[in-house]
Amino acid sequence: MLDANLKNQLKAYLEKVTRPIELVAFLDDGDKSRELKSLLDEIASLSHQISVVEKEDASVRRPSFTIGEAGKTAGIRFAGIPMGHEFTSLVLALLQSGGHPIKLDDATIEQIRNLDGDFAFETYFSLSCQNCPEVVQALNVMAIINPRIKHVAIDGALFQKEVEERQVMSVPMMFINGESFGSGRMGVKEILAKLDTGASARAAKELENKPVFDTLIVGGGPAGAAAAIYSARKGIATGVVAERFGGQVLDTMAIENFVSVKETEGPQFATALEQHVKSYEVDVMDVQRAEKLVPGRINEIHLASGAVLKAKTVILSTGARWREIDVPGEREYRGRGVAYCPHCDGPLFKGKRVAVIGGGNSGVEAAIDLANLVSAVTLIEFGNELRADAVLQKKLRSLKNVTIVTQGQTTEITGDGKKVNGITYTDRATGASHHVELEGVFVQIGLVPNTEWLKGTVELSKHGEIVVDAKGATSLPGVFAAGDVTTVPYKQIVIAAGEGAKASLSAFDHLIRASVEDEAVVEEEAAA
Image (cartoon, rainbow, N blue to C red):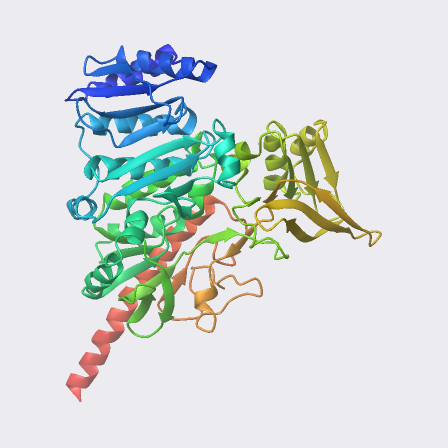
């Protein structure tokens, strides 16, 4: 199953394994079981520390396998064949189970170790989901640290009956002790915050003791990361507070237009951003949501945890999120047929009927991708014609299982109370209403800036974007903004990074001028 190049890379990684690992396979007579057995045997052939055994147990999913120290109860199980995006999860599980150091700070490891309770996690993933590995890897490492934590990572495409029974219609989807735990991208700290109810209060107390920053950046996407690097290189006290480092980039499948990086994927790019930022003396405070800005000579950022951070200058780079169509049924059926990431959730709709709302590049690309998986795609565009690039439109129109609707205004997403069963739209040319029976709806109509918490504080455009000048300055002195959250046109990663650097330089210039003004005031007062 592994080509020669991948085998050589894996063999080099497995040289870091320092203690025996046992892979216990639970198989049946199917083709997937044979594929899994072949993969496990190949892995074992690359390291003398790894062995494979087969066991019979009708109570567990098949095909599946556990990873753990020989002779000990394993806390990690993969149900399915972890290739695609999950191959990295497999490699990390092998290394960490084999004694390779876990890259978490001591405080986080201790917090995991001290969790009180027995936690059996199940995560449904798809091999094409770029958000799933973070959840899988987080829960795997927690299972290694704490023996009272167990984790099963399940390929939803392989266990379709379970997916139907448990109404799993988006990935990653997590369950704990049989009950729903959450969906979407989560890291170790986010999971801990949900498990350890006292963690938020402790974190707030620690944050309250932070000194006044010279520059505090709110948001950890490309704009925030660039601003942090430029500020830190000036030698000033720099902090970054973010809900999740990487921002919208984490939900981006392929990046092929960032100058000097020929091709990468969003999660890898986000990891590189974070590593670059942390190579400087930057205080990164993640899993924290800003709720209020109180401007002044010393600005205050109030967090959802109750903590208050203070800074002489602030750079707002909170980015944007998927725009909703805001029709009945959308929020009710989110995660139950309504989705926003075709790469992540597409495999869950294999052989089914879906709709894509939006005829721009993202919508047409989504329809093309989904057409390879589902039985039928209906693309609905509000305007008179599709807005995607001509080459994408040509490809879309060549697909026999795609129906294109222009001048279509979506009015409702319908369901049976549990999941989506159709979509209703109005033909804007005739006024006629149409209903399409289907199982999934993918919304692809652009982004909306994350500025609700800033209303009434800083000047916003009619679209909710932060109004900035050529230097990234907002309507408030000492407060700057950068990236997709601003009025700067063309929401691109490379532009956001450049704007972040610009905002940082502007903030530094403000600090210098403010300090000169302060000195002048002191001198005047002394002379008087």
